[in-house]
Length: 337
Ligand code: ATP
Ligand code: MG
Image (cartoon, rainbow, N blue to C red):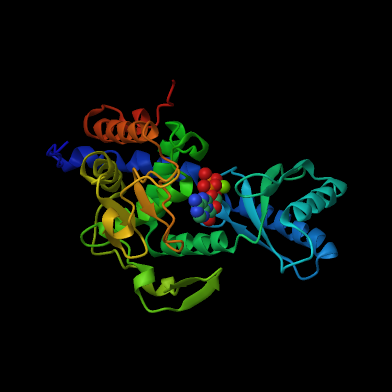
């Protein structure tokens, strides 16, 4: 596994720069799509406030973390103080209200890991999932969005990695591969590790933002407008970074011992986290620490079969970028079982 793989020829790598940037531009949603999403959120909030005047709605996930491609579904969190009603009953009641308001495909999934109501707005044709009081997701959404403000290369890299993962069928948590959230954390961590660093470690800096959610203190530096230009000393292009990202996950990451940690901006040992053995369903075969719920390994969905699938896909990507004649196409060839 210890191949020596450095650029023989920089110019070969740089040829991929323009196609990667074109792909990125084609994936970024248009401004009017954001406007439509906000409009839907406002009308949903109005509806919810008729029944629960103190409730608030927040966008989270890819529609709010700046890593969303165009035409994705939106994720909404309903924040509401304790009522004398169970979460399941609340979701059922919400579903009834949405149906009466002419929203389509309304469905309450009260037994899901994260219980939600699904709906589709016939006017904008936007689909939406509403969950209840999932404030940590709203806060980790803000963290990702704040990182994206610091250096454009994060958004470019993450869009390309997410597009690759979706094309290759390795962005399906219910099948044992990684979530979009996990891939974005892998990109942030990777850019924190470049020399010179392209991203700082916001949770290691002065606290300008602090909120406590279910005993978890979420604290970090969020004045990111002050950090624009942080990575300017590093001149790596997007194609170099995509190449190095896959090279890292294919050939350099120490799967047996390492945990990647955006929170500390470093690599931790599995031993220090006591993530060395399987506990219940957590196998820790690829370890990605959640920045706030630090006992939470985003790689826990990966099992002994899907870890092979993932690592083979990382190796395929690295090899395509190194040797293929048309890497910007081959990299995203749909996986056909
Ligand atoms: P996509 O474009 O694929 O929809 P997404 O950013 O919406 O990407 P999801 O994986 O659908 O990603 O997750 C939505 C949001 O839910 C994430 O942005 C994150 O805030 C939260 N989330 C998802 N999975 C986890 C998890 N395992 N732990 C904590 N939060 C999570
Ligand atoms: Mg989503």
